[in-house]
Amino acid sequence: MTYTVCYSCVSHIGNCRKINQDNFICDGLYMMAENDTTEFPIFGYVTTESPALFGIFDGMGGEERGEMASFIAARKASSVVVDNDNDAIEALSRYCLEANEEICKYARDESISAMGTTAAMLAFTKEGIALCNIGDSKVFRFSKGTLEQISRDHVTVSPFGSKPPLSQNLGIPPSEMLIEPYVARGRYVHGDIYLICSDGLTDMVELGEIKDMLGSTDFDKITGKLLSRALANGGRDNVSIITCKVERDPIWPFVNIFKRINRKT
Image (cartoon, rainbow, N blue to C red; front, side, top):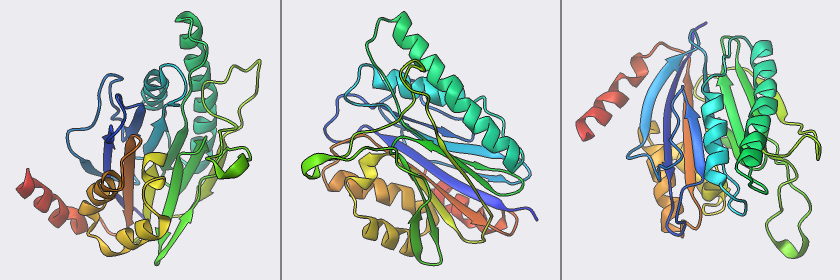
C-alpha cells in the first residue's frame, strides 16, 4: 500500500543567539552554513513510492564552528539514498561514520580543536520508518493521542540538575571513541505525526503542551505554532522543527492544505 507523507520544516536563530548552528535535511533540502533561518516554513509531500529522508542537526554551541559541523552533516545527508528498511538502516549507519570523518577532517584542516553536531534522522521507505540518531536532538511519534520519544538520547549523568552533557555526537575522532548511533525501524500507521526537533524546542516548550498542540492543531499550522511558542517562552537557543504526517490515502487529503498555504503566500 502506498502512503503519503506531508511535511513542514522550519529553522530559526531564536531570540538570543548570534548565529544559527542548526541545520536540517528535508527531502533533499538543507541550509547553507551562513543562513540564520528559513524565510518561512517549508511545506511539501512525498509518497512511499519515492522514499525520503528528514533530519535535524544541532551544531554544538559550546564548540568552535558548530554551524559548519551541522552544515557538513546536512550536506552529506542530502546524498543518502534510502529504499527499503534494511538498506535504510545500513545507509544511515554508514552515513554517520562518513559524516563523522568529514567533520573531523574539516576540524583538522582548519586547526579547530573541536567541533560537533547532533543528528536525528527519519527515513520514510517503501516498507516503513527507519530512524537513526546520535546526540540529544529528538524524534517523537504522536499516535492516537499519545506522544512518545522514539529516538534515544546520548547523554551522561549530570550533577545538580543541570542539563546532561552529550556522550556521543558527530565530530568525535575515531581515535578517541567509536560512535554508536541508535537505529530502529517502525511501521506506517495512518494518521501518525512525527516530530523531529532540536533542543531549542524541547527546552522551551513542555512535552505536555507539545502533545496538546499536535492533537488540536491543523497540520499545516503545527510547525509555525511550535516555533512561535518556543520563541514566546524565551527562544534561548536556535529552534529547528520538522513535522511529518502519514496518510493511507493518496495526496488528495492534502489538497486543501496546499490551497490554504498558497492563499497565505
